[in-house]
Length: 488
Image (cartoon, rainbow, N blue to C red):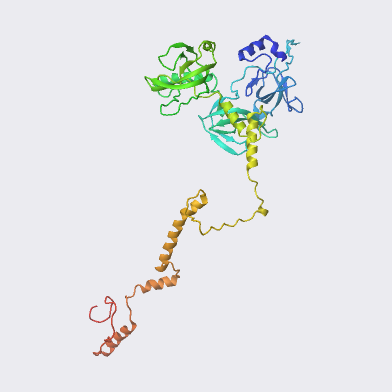
């Protein structure tokens, strides 16, 4: 048991935080102010190189991991700001004496304050994307691209990690293993300087009730525009599921039966966490239909009241159609982790973290990938001969064959047009002189007869009545210029 857990102040803080005395009071992802000066070490056993010296009420740390070593808790932390420090290990158990009015304190104190600072993160929490961020396969920022998340989108944090760049700047970078749109990968929830890429408000916490109230207030001030979320549509699947755990957003009555006119047993407070045992859709005077859920109270002041009532029903939507029960399932983290565990060929220990499970999946996928063939041993594959009895026009799932089938008609049409042009004399290559000669020939009369022109010259010279055209000469084309006075 920790020494500093015995003070009255620490017992009061533990009771407020709902943490049993003797257990670690700090949660992974939280940022805490240093309460007593301490050293940051390279090794988890608080050995090796001393990385930094942190001072009380001046410095702060972000807690990445908690390990119990020899009955004491050690924490893996990133001193803040992250760009100035490398990650290291501190003691979360031993109190340190301090000097008060030049006299040593008789009571040990914890190394960190118990209250997390604003901007802290939580495990198993759901956050809204504030600025665009890239999801990658591994914790390294240079790893392969997986997905891009945009403002307004939500992600679920599965684990936290850090990129340690002790030789350069920034020295440390916080990374988070998240689930977004059924994809799992690593992103940075904040920059090295502390600027948030995710909005640091856990949507699975009681804070979502405040967000719901604010949306109601804005809807009234804007004349009804905007407002709370309306997740249920009568023509779509109900967004809540049997077995899921959800948070109640508004105070509402618990009823004995799945009927809006059923007897009211007691009121359920806003913020109560419940598990759905059954779902039904009932008639609603204002919305046509609305879902009702049979619930079991998991957390809330009315949990003891349900002990006398085996079954209670509550509305999931209001008379105006907006959500009375949040649609974010608090068991989503467990479902995703179980899915990761089932995706690994070689089972890992039961206490393996989500980061270990995800790394195991990547290792399995890498083993299944075919090894690249070296260039010097790579053989050029010859195309397979198609048997004569195989119809190449049959449907197939092969993409290349489908592409060949599409291009064959185009190629055949092109070859046919090319042959037609060649037969018409359009496809032969001509020199510039040949083209000019053909152009000049087209200017001459349709039939140029040298003998006929010579006889005309003789007629002009001799002035006789000799027949100029032999009677055996026949003009085959009567539309051709003959050269006589007949006018043809």
